Length: 377
Ligand SMILES: C[S@@+](CC[C@H](N)C(=O)[O-])C[C@H]1O[C@@H](n2cnc3c(N)ncnc32)[C@H](O)[C@@H]1O
Image 1 (spheres, helix red, strand yellow):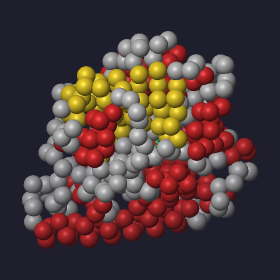
Image 2 (cartoon, helix red, strand yellow; image 1 turned 180 degrees about the vertical axis):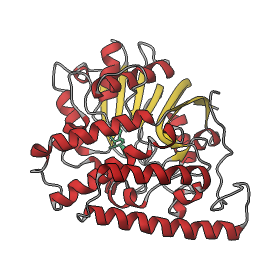
Image 3 (cartoon, helix red, strand yellow; image 1 turned 60 degrees about the vertical axis):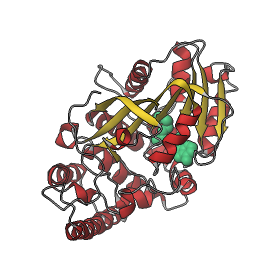
C-alpha cells in the first residue's frame, strides 16, 4: 500500500494539543468545548461576511494561511466542530433531501457556468488534476478521469457503476475512450438527472449510445438487480456518514473479482473534519474522512492501494470555479436562489474562498484528496 505518511487510526479522545493517544475523558470534553467555541466564532464570521462585512480576498487568504497550519499540526481535534463528525451515523448518506435542495438542485445555469460545460467534459464537481501539465479547467478534469482509468484498471467491456454520477461527465469521457464499456449511474439530484436525460437523447453524446443507464435514486435505498465489474464514486463519500454499512452495500454490488475506487476529499490528521459554515449553508452533514478512515473500515471491502493527491490540485480547481463564478455574474445574478441574491453571492464566495484556500495551506500536504482501490474481503 502506498502512502507518504501514516497516521494512527480513528481516534475519538483527542486532546486540544499534545499526545493524541491520551484517552483522558477530561481532555476529550475540554477539546469538545473548545471546538464548539471556535466553531461559533467561525460561523459568526461567515455570517458577518455574508451580511456585507468587507474583507479583501487577500486578507481572507492570509488569515487562513496563518491559522490552518497551527490547527492541522497542533490542534486537529478543534477541526471536528460536532460530535457527529467523529462517529458513524445511522443512515449511509445523511441529510440527502436537504443536501439536494441547498446544493445540488440549485439553478443549473449557475452550476454549469461555474464548473464548465464542454463537448466531452460535462460539468464535473470534483477535483481536477493539474500535475500532468493541464493548461485549463477542461484539461485538468480530463486528466483527473485519466487517473481514475489507470488506477481502477478500467478495461473495455467493463460494466461500471458510478455512485453519485453528477452530470454524467466521468461516464461520458470514459465511454468516449472505450467503445464497449457500459455504465450505470446513480444520482439523487433531479436537476442533474434532467441534464443527463437530455444528453441521453443527444446523438453527439456518448450517454446516448445505449450503454448508459440512469437511476435517479438515493444511495440509502437504491437496489440494483445485477453485480458490476467496477464501482467508482467521485465526491459522494463526503456525504456518507456510515462507512461500515456503505461498504457492505458496495461489496454486495461487486462481482467476486470486481474492484471499487473511491475518490474523496480527505485530511491527514487523526480525526475527521467539518465546518459549521459548510454544514449550515453548503453541505449539510458533510465531513472529510481522515486519510486512514477508509482502510480502517475493512470488514466487507479491503483497501489494496491508496493515493494521497496533493491539495494544490483542488486549490487550483476551486480558484478556477471562483473566477468563473465571478466572471459570469451577469448571467448568474438573475436566477432564483430562494434568497436575496447579494447574500447568496457572498455565501458562495465565502465557500469557494474558504475551501480553495484551506487546500493550499501547508503546501497541500494536510487537506487533499484520497483515492482508494478496494476489493471484496
Ligand atoms: C460532489 S458531486 C460529484 C459528482 C460527480 N461524481 C463528479 O465528479 O462530477 C456529488 C454527487 O453525489 C450526488 N449525491 C449526493 N448524495 C447522494 C445520495 N444520497 N444518493 C445519490 N446521489 C447522491 C450528488 O447529487 C452529486 O451528483
